[in-house]
Image 1 (cartoon, rainbow, N blue to C red):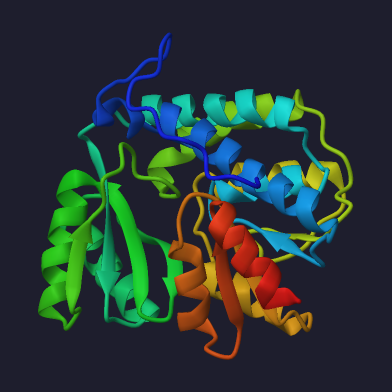
Image 2 (tube, rainbow, N blue to C red; image 1 turned 30 degrees about the horizontal axis):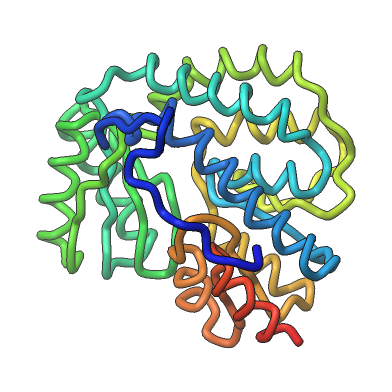
Length: 279
């Protein structure tokens, strides 16, 4: 981690491909898991400091379980790819959709989605509670489009379609979750050495079977990120560090709790910054 790696646009023997292939969940999710753990391990190598609690947003929960020693990276990667494939097959590309609703309270988003679903017969629901004024909805493409129109009419500042290939965390993912349940049962889990606050119940579980059940329900249930951050803070945690290629969660943390000190660890420069922040 001491030097910035050189970039190669097309290294000898390497491969490059279209962005639409990387955007498919079957490819995106294993890459994101690997990147998050790489950043976390770089942190450990430099500092030897273990976090007092870990959590992850959606797919990030698998990274958190790897960081906590509940799941090995070798087991996590094929598990995540299987999960992604099951999700993609449950709803073909172009049939489902997701959108971020900005500037509206979560309950108003829930209510608006319920009204659209009842009136249209299309599936649409609130699935990611990211910060007090940002909630992601998911469902059929038609359902999400109708909900975006309805929610903007009710006062939402913006409704932004998301570049994803499946309606994650919605009830449309139940068939994928049933397949995942079988794979989870065949995957080895250990008691976490660090508490992992899960998305679905906002609880830190220690029993491997309970962890499996939470991951199963998470596949078609909401990501309660606002409550997760609040639960982390309730443990007396003052600094929350995002590990992985991006700064989205660090920004969410600040919007959820302005008193929290948040930072993103995604490259050697930011690693040095985070070490300085905590020293």
